[in-house]
Every structure is written in C-alpha cells, then in structure tokens.
Length: 539
Image (cartoon, rainbow, N blue to C red; front, side):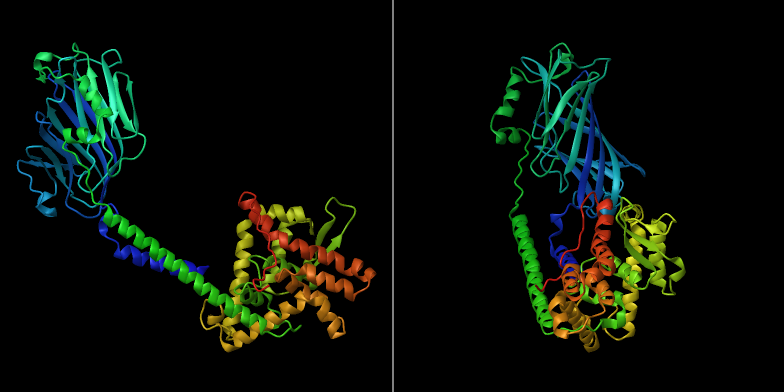
C-alpha cells in the first residue's frame, strides 16, 4: 500500500505540472458582499466587499453593461494597505507595476469595466465603491431597475457567494406594499429585512451563472421628475424577460457566455486516461508481485524450525509484507510469549463473571525491554491487582490506544534493527522480496515453512512421529492466525485430560488474543471492528 501511494502521488504531481494553468483559478473571488443605496434621483451608491485570492495576473475587473443609459463614475478602491489612486485612462495592457495601487473605469459603447490592480499576491480583501447614474428609471406603469450585478464572466475569476443589500436614503424603507423583487441567473433567495432588500445566492456562482436583480417600485417612492424617463415602456415587460428566451435577457446586458470548454474536456479525458493507466499499471504490478510471492511461498519446504532465532518481531515484519500476518496480531503473539516464559499465567475460573483471566507475576519478568514494556501495559490495565480480566484490557485499550500503538511501533523498530544487523535487508525500509538479500530470502523461506507446518500441524505431527513443543509454537500460531488449525492438531496429539488442564486455558487466551487489537480499534473508530482473519493471501 505504501508503494501504491508513492506511485500515485508521483504520477498525480506530474499530471498537475502539465495541466494548462487556467484549469485552476489563478484569480478568484470567494465572497462578494454588495451594498446598494438608492438616491431620490434614481442614482445608486454601490459599495462592494470582495474576498479574493490571486497567484498571478495584474488586475481584477468586473464588466457591467450600460444598457444605453447607465453611467459609472467615482470609483474608489481600498485594501489593507490603504486607498488606490484613480486614473482617468486605464490600460488593460499595462503590467503589474503600472497597475499596482491604482484603479480605473474603462468605458465603451456597450458598457464599462471596473478595474483595479493586484498589488500583492495571495489572499486579500478589497472595498470597491462607485456611483451608477440612472439605475432606477421611470416607466409608464412603475419605477424600477433591472441590473446584472455579477456577469457570467468576470475576467478569469468567479465569485462563489454573493449577497446584495438594497436600501434607500431619506428615511425611507422598503416593504412588500411598495416594491416587488425578482431574481435571475442564480439559485438563491430574496427577502425584505428591516426595510432592506436582501438577495443572496444559495449555491456558488460559477461559469455561466450570473447575479441579476429586478426590483419594481410604486410611483410614489421616488421623485419621478428626477428619474431617467423610459417614456411609455412598461416595466412589467422586464419581468417577462425571466420567462422569455435567455439569450434575449443576456443581450440586454451584452453578456454572452461563450467560453470554449472543449479544451477542458480534452484535459479531463486525458487525466481520466492517465489515472486509469496508473491504476492499471499498479494492478499489473501487484499481479506480478503476488505471483512472485506465491511461487516463493509454494517453493518453501515445510519445516518446524523457528525462524529468526525466536525474534518474533522480525518474523512478523517479514511475514506481514507477503500476507502471512495481519496488522496488529503481534500484540497477541508477544502476550503468548510472556505466558510461555511464566511471567503471565492464563487461567479459567468459574468463580468470576470473567471466566478467562491472566495472573501477572512481577518478580518473574526478565531483562528484555519489550517484554517489560508489555508487562507494564498489562499491569496498568489490571488496575494494580495483578489479575487482568479481558474487559479491563479492552477498557485500557480504548483509553490508551496510543500507548499500544507506540508499543507495536517499538516492536517493529526492533525488528528492523535485527534485520539490518543480520544483513537480511538491502535498505532501511522493507517493502517486499525486492528489498531482501539472499540471506533475507532464505530467512523468509524458513518463515513460510514454519507457517505451512503450523497450518497443517495435525498431519505434520503424525508424520514426524513425535510430540512437538506446542507452547513454543503457539505464539507463531497466533502470529499467522492459525490457532484453530493448531488446536485441532494438539487435540489429536495429546490426551483429553492433558488438553483440558494444560492446553485449553492458554489456547483460550491465544484465540482471544486476536480480539485485542480489534477491540482497541473498535473503541476508537466507532464500532468498526478490525479482527484478523486467516492472514494468508496464498490459499
């Protein structure tokens, strides 16, 4: 899995390097708050607050249609550094230095661009204010405006959320009796809150979305003589724009979304093909790797010899990489090793609600550092009475999961130190057969042979014709998740009385050892139990 993650990461990084830069937003507006104060003459004082990000480019701009009668003026821009200098002639072709801390309006026959320089890359907040003359007009049946506050294309950046507050001075407030509101081009809501019209998006604006607001006022609200006159035009007709052809409304704002997305599709398809190729390659690599492992395993002779001179940590690390061990079973295997050494005794009791328990003998612990660490974990879990019930270990694991994780990590570090010292691995990290020296492969063959011996213990014991030291093999049976197979062989080999008195208590704990790590994970991950299975991918 580690190798797969490394390969995927490298390929993904390479894909990112060759993608066109405009696939990812280099200029973006994550939030736009707009405040519009309508004056008695129909003009509007607009203030916008932008939250932005930029990693290249030299300006932000937003396009507005003049609709043949609107006029934009009095542009002011500020950021955390202070006010921007307004220039009378803004040149889009100027560079970063010329545009820094400056702002300007570019007018043409169809509308205007509100522009300001990017003075500093990264995250920034801007305040943009300007005046719009003739926004509210006088129509035959009502006063009102139809205005697109955010067009479908804003340079190469897109706002994600927009909120627009529309109010009026002269101590007037809005309510449903004097105005009516409609929205177009986006998914959102509108309401009148404390005399202020509030329109906002509920889904992010992107690509061909726009933010268009239509408001109709009663004739008595503004001084009609001061408003721009639309003659006998009926304002209700503008409401019908929403129900009419979309292109007609877009034409009203000179706002056509014609971005060519074919390149995006080509890139997307290319990425998909590359990802499929990567995972296809990984799958082929895994098939090849598993085939090599299977052949290696099948060619290993069956043998009772305990590999790595009894270093069960090293056996676990070597065997885990070819699927002979499940993650975490080392905890149970090392516990069985303590039982074998007499430091811990497994007993069955009818006098307690927990029939199965462990007695701890502190005076018998040896000098092995990892044995002492595990014994200390068990002693703390037993709450100081040196009698450990399964429920106590489960509770301790839930409350001190990191202590168990650290202990298992120490065991794996010990294993790697041993493997390097013995010259079994070529590198500092063992990730499979390719990392083993010839001595390491010989050691792994012995581990495979031992696993086969335990897996077929009943037949192997009969063939050998003599009883094996089952206690010394039991930690490996736990390590390989083969206690059931091993127990069946022991029952065939020994008398029923011997089995009940000598074998059964330890075998019960050997089987229960599988659940330790699973119970800990279950407690930490919301009842997602991790219980080791057969552990062998070479069935």
